[in-house]
Length: 246
Image 1 (spheres, rainbow, N blue to C red):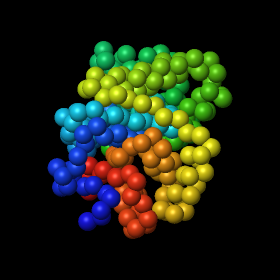
Image 2: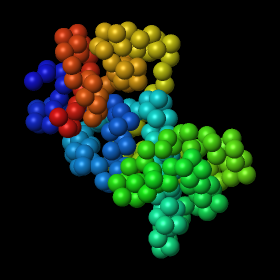
Image 3: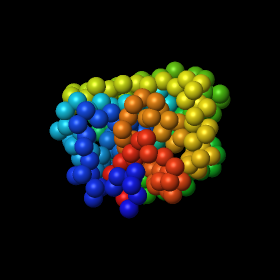
């Protein structure tokens, strides 16, 4: 068992009193996804922190942008799912689903772009598997560039993505946590480059670890298995990695 990586079976031995904890994007997105089997594990971690006095939550500006972007893509996928199901079955969406669709012209344009690429099979498969294999970033970019008349309709989805993150942050604060949004400087950038080579981490994982350290965090909570490696174990002990799912 790795000394600096905390797995579920050793959580009871951790002292979270007045701890500063860095949350990564995967952890935050898990909190938002009711269908993610790991959500109860994420909630358990927050409950443990809540039961400890004075715990402080740190989220970096990189995490904020990553989470909002992923929320936005999820919204677009949901819009496509609802609109294609409606067109395929003729069954009108629920009131909640209609609110998510927003401007029907924009929703239809997103769907039509995929059809224009002769990828209706992807939409049909999406209905049965829940997995969409068409690149959402490419889809949105194509709408902006080729269908400017519907571009304003995307604003509703961006607003919803931002508000979803704001509400998540507020929910965490209402649990009694002081939530800090940290920003990186040239120093963090240089240190992250060093961490990339030293610990064989992807650049985004390296900057997360650096931001946790420079913001005085004792723990970084993640579902990312990249931190579980011998390079980290042998060369680094400033921040403990909590992996709720081993």
